[in-house]
Amino acid sequence: MNHQELIQQTLARLQAEGFKSTLARRATIEALVEATDHLTAPQVVNVVHKHHPNVGRASVYRTLELMAKLGMLQISSLGAATTTYLLTGEGHHHHVICVSCRKTVEFDECVISELEQRLAKEFDFQIEGHLVELYGRCSSCRQ
Image (cartoon, rainbow, N blue to C red; front, side, top):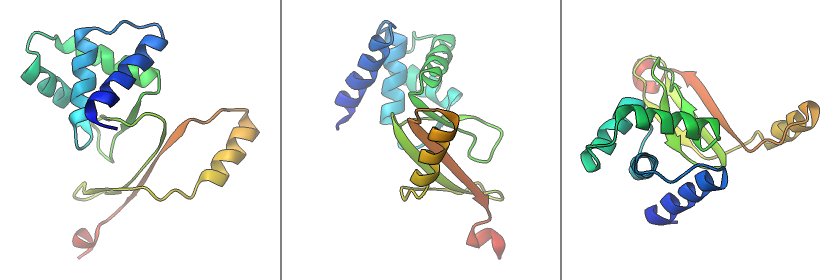
């Protein structure tokens, strides 16, 4: 799926939830779609302001909050005190994070589907995705 299709799909999800497609929401989604990595809220604001300088900081923050509440973002601390956001939609996301240098490696291999099914049944949940963060020290920091 290309960037424009993902932007349109994300806007459609917002509208399906009863929310209007505003300039601030579209600009925030565009910034997240074009990102190649996790962004902090201030970084999202900076990207939005490059293309739409009149969009308010508070509007971007409210959009991030709304999208997080609706489960449209993966939220992570990546082992740091700062929250980061990544537009991933449904599914799963995994990281290995160095606690010393903060090097972060994303990986796709998922081995928790059995656990996910057991937890869904045990707690009567419909699980729609997950985020796995594993912390340790990279080979450079262990030396």
